[in-house]
Image (cartoon, rainbow, N blue to C red; front, top):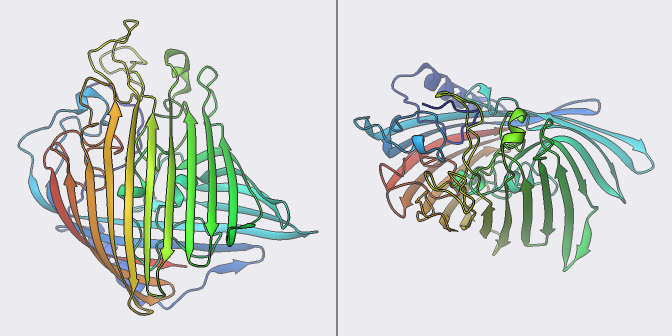
Length: 458
């Protein structure tokens, strides 16, 4: 098997709960969260400590454990296509725990100026979520008339806006609320990037227009160092409209020479994790445009919707170190065995796709909230003569009920149905064949899941 370069895992394999010490520990943690009295954020001088913890259990049908013959290989490598037959197949239980503290700094320095900073990392099942990457490590200055300037590591709006728990706090409430959260099939799919390491961000002061306030923002990131021929470059433009009964988020990303991915949470670094690959590779690019809207119909009912347009340039498959166990680059949408017009083997093809989201939420009272949602990852348009998933789709329908114990603790239950358009390679806007569902599209074209969970905010 060819050696795999470092890859973050967009879709962890299901973990059995029968019997598991970790499962018992997670359940105990959840009970502890519910029994604990409300705890305020910790403030000490100009510093504050906030965050959230989450524990969730799911039971999903049509799960195939370790079905891929080359375990751990990412989907665009042809040797990752084969399935190992005879593996256990059926209903499986999975669990996940998340913990993310935010250490913030804020200090008024006079004449309308304020200095601030943020440090944050996410732990998944007790381990760092993405090795080598921090979610937030930045400093900045703000002025009441001139806006905010932030420098350092941070999350993008293209991922943080649709992700739970909506880490952008400018308006003081999250997009979904009620402990329901959004679907990772929406937040973690597509041609965007989610984590930046050397970014500069400017946000304007609020601007009144069309009966509401607008926040306008631009972010630039130069990626990881060491790349001189294929220099990474990331640009994101963001606009938020805050009206009396409507929220609108618009995000546009354009990225060059990051790792070619279809994973909206992906870190932006370089073409591979190894800058010595620079002279061996050609450039690639990708980008997306996202629109999300939430409309309050009444005090109890709100509707939401979103659309995302994805674009990838494609990336040729190139072996970067010699030998049977040599490294390969991070290719995308490759015609394996084919050649381009210049005779170069294994060319990558450009692709475009569109994803949509719809949702509704009903507040029964101050404690109980019910919601339904629909996410559809569409077919891709590409000239690739090989089938790499461009003909497939994924539709996720979900219903959930959340109960607010107090302002710090919410519990919820959910039920979801998953339907692929066909059995075979997953849609191009998915990072793996079993991402978001734990159902490998090459093994089954449908399934369903039920789950319970608890969120604790401090």
